[in-house]
Length: 216
Image (cartoon, rainbow, N blue to C red; front, side, top):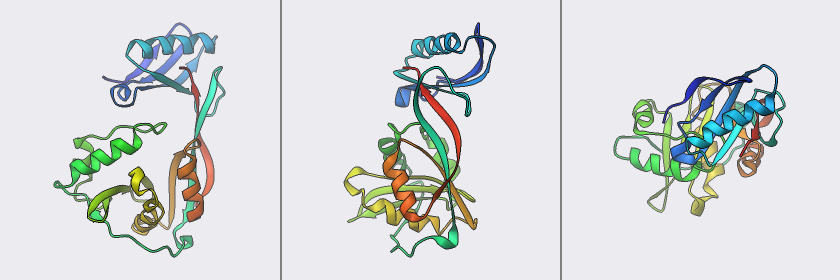
């Protein structure tokens, strides 16, 4: 299923993000412009997303308020690398062709229900291979968690539920590998477990990136 970059309705224009529907059941409406009736326009977008099989639909107009139930905000958090606590490290291994399928399995299992998360594919792991920016961690010899970073961001941390206590130490470990002296991340406000962990590491909110409203 493909996204619709420009969806023109009777009351406005939006981008419809439909590609995640087969994976998470979620469709996303990125409002670009409303001419007269925002509620009517959202109904148009909702109807199209529902016809494409969406079980849940969320809409955002950056930081504008929409006539729907507020669902969550995507917030930015930041920390100076030198302020990271001296937490014990964990052993990690680089993403390789041999463990890439496990990487995808853990990612899908952990992120499928997370608001705003996008599916990963073999194309994504192929791009990450050799960049030393994606990692896996084991517990008692079994893969238990994954992490991904970029030049100045923590992109993802996912820990299987049965190993949840690993997240704090794994995050601390990979943050030390981020090249930038200032590290940022984005997280849904409703992902309270993740927000709490980042706060314990010393991250502080630095802005709201977008606000999301539940249409269905």
